Amino acid sequence: MEIVKPMDIEKRSFEIIGELLGERKLDPENELVIKRVIHTSADFDYADNLCFSDGAVAKGIEALRGGCDIVTDTTMARSGINKNILGLLGGEAHCFVADEDVAREAKERGVTRSSVAMERAARLEKPCIFAIGNAPTALISLYEQIKAGKLAPALIIGVPVGFVNVVESKELIMEAGVPYIVARGRKGGSNVAAAICNALLYQIRR
Image (cartoon, rainbow, N blue to C red; front, top):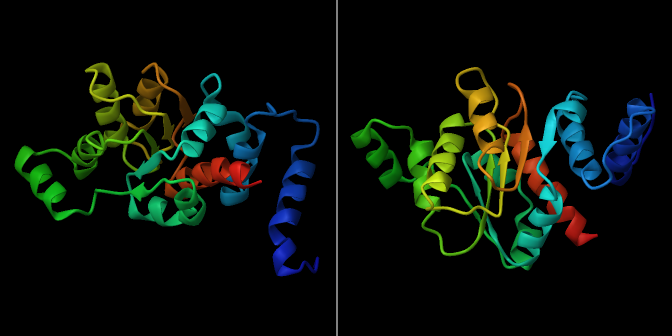
């Protein structure tokens, strides 16, 4: 068993990831995002299924430096984001899914809370990064609002996990004409969404 000091665990983990990737060459702009997702999930499939629009990482970092907010579709994703760094940059993390008025409106309209939460987020006055790790309906709502000219996200992180409309919703975002980081296929999760946000934030901190 390898003895590693607590402060060195993450560093050693990234070294192991690099070793296991072997000769595989990652795009330098996207490399730290991909490696942090692998670090979070221990799943090397993300080296292949994470898709980036042109300049997505740079655009996300630029938005964060400018003090943009982050909107998530789960409290888990929100709790996993490094809000200290985000706050120092002038940003805030939001999740409206658990709000009582969102739940009430969703029930009245017969739609998901995630859909209503994205509509609520579209009213925020600041530019936003959307980090979606659970609800395909959140991505569908974002797509519809973008196409209707009601929303212009700084970046969409589209990594919901599951089986119903997951693949299709991710493909919609890749066709929406906005910056995106998407995990193609069925894999993803709130932890992956938070990991991608943190990968961007940590690049600024460094």
